[in-house]
Image (cartoon, rainbow, N blue to C red; front, side, top):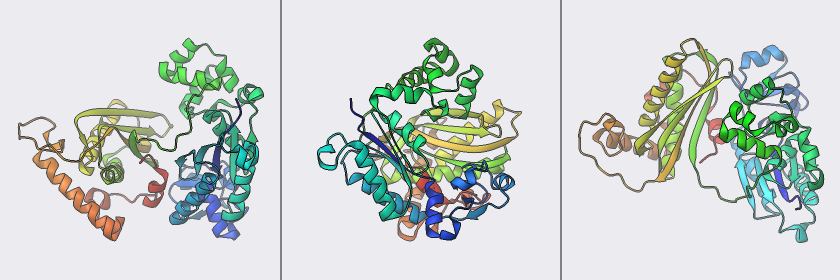
Length: 413
């Protein structure tokens, strides 16, 4: 098979945009953010500064670091423009975030030349028309194309020949694979697995014991470049989620409650905008040592009310902290809602005194919450997001990550 799948990824996107808007930042270590690093330039990364790091830690690593607030409307505009250029070459474009997309050019080579030439033209046009660097990987599968674009960074192109793809893949570090984060990387390292080739040669039963059956089987397949996924132009939303990097804050209600309400507000608004509700609510709590714990609950009725989502998330986080009493700091909170379904009308419920009655959309309390959300959504649609909000968020501690960045970063819906 020919390598016809492209993965195009704008380099250090938010930081690159800021350097383009302000040429004085070129070649200097700079980050977008304040209390938390939202994005870092390559010059900052050379000092060990990473996204999600606290601002004080970043400045410790790089005293001359420059902080900028960010131009979020420009990020959206320029990200859209770059993906549009990719779409000029093929209708098969799958956008996976604001700054990256897959494309399948198998049916377009008679018009624009071989895949490698198409990739070169895309990179040239993005640089000339938008002024930003973009890296492109070309391979036979989506997984390998994404890895190739990472290897190509910064501002490069890597084309993986199908005849030598395993030679290319197996020499690379295991953390380049989809699904291998810091925790999985550490677990694999304890077993002496640091490269994709070593992972490929690890017995399946050993991986399953180490990572679980599903993750072990998936990573084993990807290590041999077995990835049957096609480039899809439309993906039905399976979940809606948002997360908030907190730095290292005390594991106390005064910290996590406003953060959870803020996340629930974002998720609930996105769900309601698409007439969706979800039955399963999941929270993720990351502690100071980067270890994460998740808890979830599946409800009898699908929900999208901000207050209901926030209350459920609070209960789940309290349960996590109760089972980990020695953890004093949390660095990240996340909420996701899954088992989504489209809701056109609400079934009213009789007051039967059920335990979860107040959280059911058709109950008296649920209907009141729905009416409040509807009013908030309408006001925001007309006057902007900050025109009205929920007291638990507005009166809580200030958020170091701007709302606009969360909207761009969370693209599930």
